[in-house]
Image 1 (cartoon, rainbow, N blue to C red):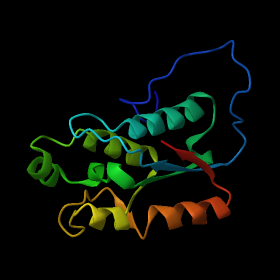
Image 2 (tube, helix red, strand yellow):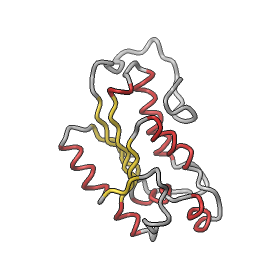
Image 3 (cartoon, rainbow, N blue to C red):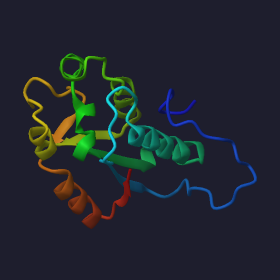
Image 4 (tube, rainbow, N blue to C red):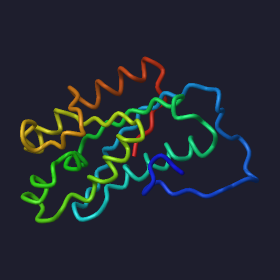
Length: 155
């Protein structure tokens, strides 16, 4: 079974080469901040992250060898909102809560940019999903992790 069970679908490709090395330690920082944000559907970068994580595991990398950090920022910041706050703002349930919970359960560190939180008028004390850690800024977290050897992905 894949660690992010309901997201990040993939295909069995036994004919493919250049597979993940199961003996390596993977350190990945994943920035979710693309401009397009549609409040009525799952935020696409989260699905890409689920796929990235599932592909490494399906490819033979033990989860203990995967250190993956998500940093949400920019126009996608609303995904961090509690269902109540999201409903108040957009008039519908937050479609991202389930995937965020599954990403965290799989072992991914789920963070959001405190700068974007305030820029988008989200109250950090009452409107942010408790599964999410607020970091000083996506830009400083990403630069710091890159300097520590993390591979960088942006969607």
